[in-house]
Length: 409
Image (cartoon, rainbow, N blue to C red):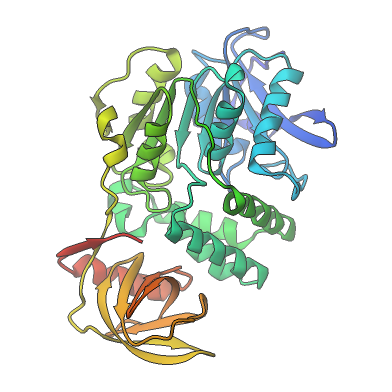
């Protein structure tokens, strides 16, 4: 490996280097302070809507201490090669093949969101090639509510409803109830929404393939054994803190840090809080028990972290109607209502369709809902948030309400 030594953020716009592994094309860029560098490199693996340009600050932060490699596997980032036949495990194996082809020393992957599943699988399947592992925004663990939301996004894209898909995906990535805490600006939210609304047909196909890989993934049969650090955003609803902690608990040598006032994009929202843990971790020095904006979770509590995150309240007017264009209409009692989901009671048929429902609750506009769990006369719902106006009205009511009960979707 020969590294580029004159890093500047604009270089992330340059044409990448290319490695051909059989029929698969991999794109990468590699930077260091010295052209020949035998130290263990940091390997950046980004999420669904990230490219090399997303990591300019991180590369600058890491370069004084580490070589840095940015890698786009087929269908990732700026790599336009489609790979519908490849599973998550096979993509993780391509990382190992990349390291072998370039004769790299053991890697230190940083996996973010979708990239976290690839990084973790690489570490678990190729332990001799992984020195340290850093994960944030853990995916692929199958929480029912998250799976329903991901499935709904795929259905909307297949139907050509890109605007509704984008609105729902934005709410998954950026918790709109916690904007004051996370500091996400309206300008950033609008830019991300526009990016998702303007996906090209090829970008839509890539997203469909990547999401199907997550849904098809059966779960980890073994976990990483190398030193591992997991960063969890305090308000991340898409990949929740207890899921991060549970993964850390299953690893041989892992720590989990809670990033306060962060959600699914915590590494961008609370950069310094995240860096206060990943700096010493990547250098192999002791982690702090706490730092401004972050807390290290006790190892003996990782598998017992509270799973109840979102407050749910019984609205003042509990009468509601569950509407479906084909199945019909039912009166229901809205026993719990939160921003991300709720619980209704009613004499509902056993064979409810999974999609196409709307909930009319009190004076709120009709809310799109997805059926999650149906037991007896109780039906748990999740809100896909594909209608911006309805979501804003629900958020306003939830924020005003005084919670007296908590539930989880």
